[in-house]
Length: 233
Ligand SMILES: N[C@@H](CCC(=O)N[C@@H](CS)C(=O)NCC(=O)O)C(=O)O
Image (cartoon, rainbow, N blue to C red; front, side, top):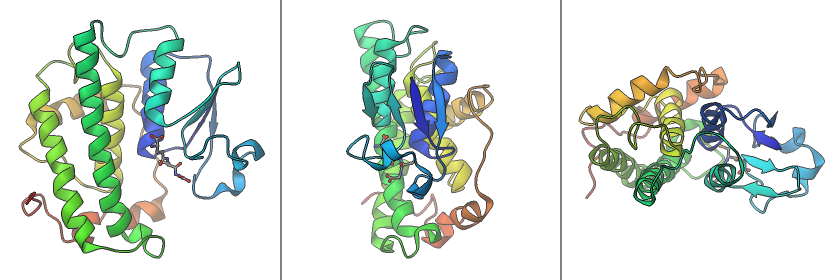
């Protein structure tokens, strides 16, 4: 199986962390950096291997192509041996999916905030203070929702690592690490989990292009958002 991936984006990192936690070794990693500069992409991808052509993408040995990170995680769970990373019972699996949905939603709000607020995207996307003022509080609310959904167990969904940990860690590493947007201080369980999980070998060291990081890391001040003033209407 081939995995086309990108170094530090939040969707690709879901797969990077998952592959390490699952212990998959039959995957050939093809790293494409950066995804927006498609001049270095192989011809098959340029022709549109998936409708979205976004990363990550997997191409299985039988020719199956899967795009969209959450679909890839499910596909690998369905086809690869290793620890069950969705949960043992239907109820456990439902809880894992609830958590995945919360962090996926959180990332969508964050992505809009960054896309229309960060200097990194100036000239690419229209700047909008309104988008920041709507999406930033929504992002923090999703983290507060996650805080209410988790306990004090080792992992987000309980005593075993699941895809929820992979999705959450990829999101928070990107938001906190690249954009310097912290977890709100009233999310203590989430913060504790984040500190614990960050030290696992599955979580790669930060590898941000310095110029992009320098532009990204002032998102809060660039958009006039602080955790205190980021409240939903
Ligand atoms: N919903 C998709 C989003 C993937 C995505 O946006 N990937 C970014 C990298 S972080 C990308 O490939 N951007 C370039 C593009 O969309 O052309 C997923 O979950 O895989």
